[in-house]
Length: 586
Ligand code: G6P
Picture (cartoon, protein in one colour):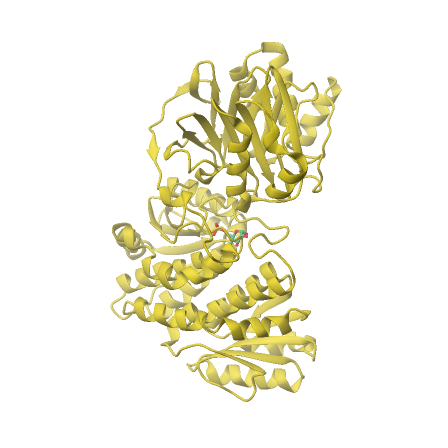
């Protein structure tokens, strides 16, 4: 999604803003801009591209002044153009804003503002905010009142930061993240702690539905009706300031390589919380797992493990679908939300629906300061450090690790896996990256890739296809092996690659039959297995492990394959086009 940042202090704002935006590019990276208020004037510089590119052409850091705002965009309303890039000034130029989220009633607001003489430069929903602020400010000359009347007029989910010509910084939060950093030189307002983490570890998390004003009276918080609010200062972990890729060419490659360690550590510092969630699973009548994208795939693996080995039925729900099935949840339900960011709008909506129906909500999440943790009764941390690459890698295996640890606590029939051993096997798998790189060279020209897996391997087939789409921009589909003959086989010919997830376990022979069916139609077969077969055009060997543990190993070569295919295609694996790491709009 978009990232927003603001700074007011006694040092030059522009370089702090640019640095913060670089750290938050994972949230959106199609265009960038900053605005600085100086000597009663607001100046804006912006452009299309990533922060470093726009910085090079627009000299963002050359803007002078101690108060400013900045933005990286993930387009929702309006194409990726310089005009649509944020910040957006009001038409008379005394207010500028950066916005994350969606203003549902922007068309109506726009018409109302146009009818009283305001003009619009962009196609965005966001510009309605700056003109609305200006409308009230012209009448009242009061920043707080301008903010209150503006939020009263807005419908949707948003956070925004505004600067006023007089040098006041103001912000509002409504169902989108916003955090205040208390630095030595001044105040930060940001979508994420990463925006300022190297300057301070003292933060305040405003509640949903709050206005923040930073000006001559210092830092003030109000609810949307204007009542003052008070907050405690929270100390955040310095670890999240430490997002460097070291010697690796990309964050994605580093994060794939982190897995042998991160997967072992997952959840280890929240064992009490883990027990509490297991307690909820024991006492609830119905149990659900919810998540989006990769996190949903972890839920699908968990369904299998809990049912087959823990004898407990947990229903996975794709978060973006939950609003159409609100009857799912009731007072006797527990909903466990899986999310790396803890900010995905679809996940947050599911949690709100569940809570409104009296269900108990728990979460498994990486960012322990996120909105999801605030809405959960109990949360277990992935504990895998920052994941910057937009395509989830280590967060997936850490989610699996925690879910397996929970299953082992729940059921005496399911032994705690030997994570140290799996870790050693992961290292071996990663060591075969040269061979995987060779295969990626060939694969980069494929038009379609099918990934087949039966049983526990099916969710991994879905996750594999997602990685290939996200990173390598190749059409890919994950299929349960047996479904091939019910349709997809019609598409299989010599231009197609099929990856079979085929360890030597209960699914092996059936999947081998599917491989034969594919080979008979002249497609190329890549086998991921501990066991060689002549049917494979390429065999990627993974170590032999017990059936329920193979997800940890079979996903790793696919992550590498997708990563290297992206490199072969000259795509940026850390920031795939059109995507964002944390999608905070519906
Ligand atoms: C976005 C990302 C995906 C991620 C999904 C869920 O779509 O591009 O990689 O799996 O969000 O994110 P979450 O932070 O909720 O796990």
